[in-house]
Image (cartoon, rainbow, N blue to C red; front, side, top):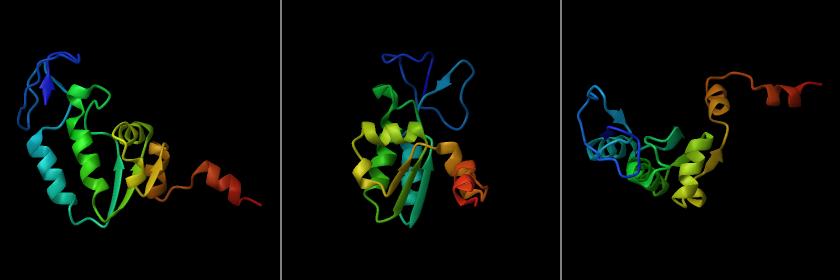
Amino acid sequence: MVVDNIAPDAKTEIVGEVIPDGKIAVDIGPKTIALFEDKLKFAKTIVWNGPVGIFETDAFARGTQEIAKFISNLKATTIIGGGDTAAAVAKFKLEDKMTHISTGGGASLEYLEGKTLPGVAALTEK
């Protein structure tokens, strides 16, 4: 979903794979929501780091809200990483339906990469 300018009353337009010149992507559209849901429906573990739209503006929040609601109803382990994604889950009142929420998005990704986190290293040093 694209707009000419980022404003709550901006006229939205659903486009294909290419974002037209002068347009700003603000959310995913219905086909992309369906694609995500199709790929996630059998997942046993979901790590989500980063909202899929400008969820703070209601007009651009549908994609993030739909994905959050969808994964909150799965029988999967759901790990939410990053302050923006955590804020989105809170906005849609789905915190209690997620397995784990961390505001450390970058740190979460580094941990998954196998990197040693400074805070954890400090705790394990003798």
